[in-house]
Length: 420
Image (cartoon, rainbow, N blue to C red; front, side, top):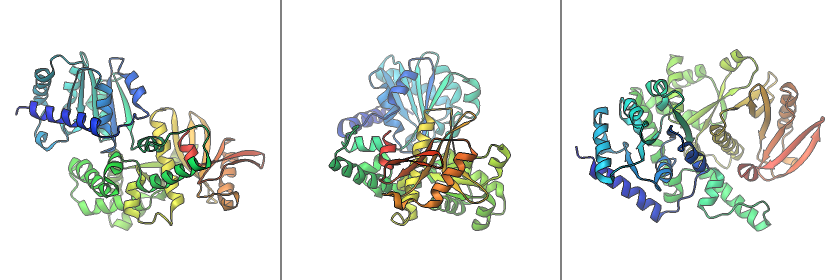
């Protein structure tokens, strides 16, 4: 196979996208560029179609580079022994190069040795739609020699930038109304780049690609319909507690280990992520039900069909994904939810080391009177039990600060918190 034609076409496609479309600088870009100053491999992981290809192109475009995307049907038969031919094709097309981008490299088996050799003389960027990209041989061979960045669909700040809405320190009433209008759109349609380009009609295709390519094909799942039912159940019951034994009964799957494996596959593809219930005893964390959140509100809205009835939960999912995005840039950050035996609950516990730093409650409220008493009760109880005084309530559009039971509680609108 002559790889030069494919390499040239893929490069031209990226360059044409940059010319004809509005490309915004992702929040991670400057940090990623700093990582490339050192002789490390930069690994960019994240859910399919979240912008990893363009992101890697933007990192290298000002330098001499070679790019190839293995998520191309013409490359489906590529084996590890072909990778050196691809390197030769790069040299043939571009001469000497400094950067090499291997996009969706997990599609090629035993690629690790090739990358290990490349990193000695090149700056290497690899991307993948599976969190297990670094498991196994690469991790053991390259201990301390790679840095991983997880890319997410657009944050709200990036979403506003894409729509030419400038963020400021102070907003007029008109500017705030415009931001709230775009917040409603963002909560419904999410942040996948292609949704802004093609509209929400592209979401079923994105979802189907994740399920089919990143889960069914990758793991050789035979019970296809059962896995699809599990995925849909988890996403339509987003931000709610689930237990594996209950899921097994609902889906008529006898082995809990099967449920556990399938959920791990959904997590590895970045479609969902779990929040553990916080407890100082690790055993209790392990056995307690988990909350499942979805990587993007657009996929939730596509499957759930109940946005108007569940705006509060869509807000909660948006906060969950934003916390995960911030966590991906801060390795010391841990995120949980909290619940006691009296069913008092807090949506998010943010922990650093041994210390609980923040307790966060999310509520669809535009005034003080709309905030439910049980939400405040849960926050105050958790604050006392976890010895945390930094209590935050994220509202739809209510801002204030109050002292209740000797604790200071800050109320902040969702749009403002997302732009912090």
